[in-house]
Amino acid sequence: MYKKKIYWVVIFFIILLGVWLIQIGYETSTAKGEAKISSVEDAPVSNKKNDGEMLQKDHQEIPEESSLFSPAEVAEYQEWLRSRGNFAGVRGSEYDSYDFATLHQLADSGDLHAMHKLAHLYISDVYHKQYGFKAAEDMLMRAALYGSSYALAVIADFKHSQRFSAASELDKRHLTIVSMAYFRAAELRGDYWGSITMRDPLLKINPIVLEPEEKESIESFAQAIYTQLEAQRESMGLGEFDNSVPASVAKFFKELKEQQPYVSD
Image 1 (tube, rainbow, N blue to C red):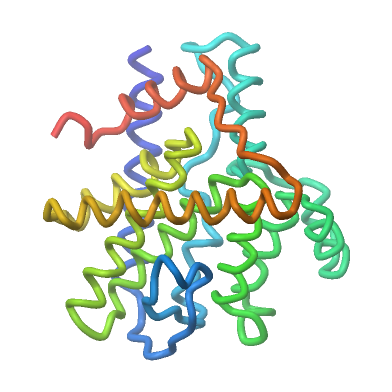
Image 2: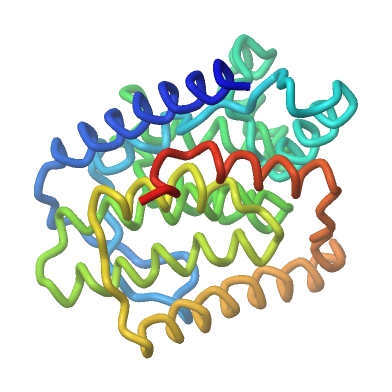
């Protein structure tokens, strides 16, 4: 158990350092665009390549084995996370060999892995000038529509990074609220991966004190994101979201939270 905890702590600090290095390297951006959900936010959206860099990185890999879980539990929480669009740690899959057209065909059929792969590609060296973050965010929102709660966390992470190129303190504050709302929207789906591995480390680096009315805004924004997505699903005949959380997944999130060094502060 002690060695396992040391392993998690080391991995977490490597991730934390990587996030910090990414954040301090952002360039000032003036590019603006419309947000996907206009009824929820009107903050500027950048198409700069560097602003989307965090989308290309796995913040923490899904553990493939653990002394705390039975093999059946590991298989169950892995499958649950991937059904929510979280493919962290999945390397060398057939999706790496698919061409652009094939990925689009798969995405059109509702394939979450293809949607996430395209979102990564849209901000890569090859495609970022043609597509950029706006297209990546649209694809991530599409993935969220088809069931990816992880996509909401990735958008939240990006919104938080935009704070460093905001034109004013007011814009910076607004982006903070929007970012927290997307993380909260993922939680409404029962998914705490983004909050634990992405939001909490960011807040550890950049502590933010929220006013009561801002907390209310975050909850309202999160509900609006969720409600609009579910309304779109209903109109498409997809039905309501499945927000069920197996016991193994709840246990996984509990252990994941407890293994993070910042929880003892």
